[in-house]
Amino acid sequence: MAPLLLVLVDLLACAHPSPVLQVQTGGDRLPAFTAAPEGALAPNPFTTEALRGALAVGCTFRFEMRRVGVDSTFEQWRIVAANADTVTINTTSLNAEGALLKDEGDATYTWDELHHHADFPAATTVREEGVVQVPAGTFSVWHYIVRDEAADTTSRFDFAKDAPGPPVKLTVQQGKGTVYEMILLERTRP
Image 1 (tube, rainbow, N blue to C red):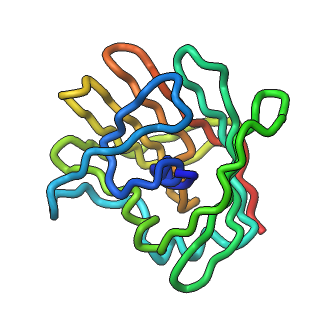
Image 2: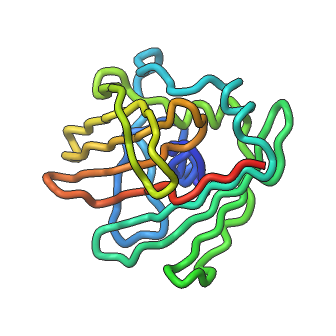
């Protein structure tokens, strides 16, 4: 998704409405999610209203994206337009030196679509409270730990309780190893 929560990962980075994350290493973007059965969802970390209130025009997120066997890339997600119904996010990918790798352009979502980026299947999701430290700071978080037995994958989404939006950290393990991480470097507010 081009960005935010697939989580506003490809929640925003992939722009898929429901999540058990399937990871491919070496690709440009994270792939699709497996939909949860209707009505069988874990509690969402934020309300639509909380997202609308927190993601104002000018709000910017910078992430480091780490994939196994590939140099880290850095993504910037910037809110370029927002109204009562929709939000538009501009996404760019940079290398470690800050050179533009790809301009993903703008993607527009309804607030409801953005909210549903954090829909996780209740049967395979554990929600816990904790604290996470990333370059952007130390956050009191909800850990969403989502297990996909068929893919032997466990995804952990760490959502800052007081900062509605994408996770401050996302880690995907396949087998016993980490294959993907998304780490919040900076969040600026207008």
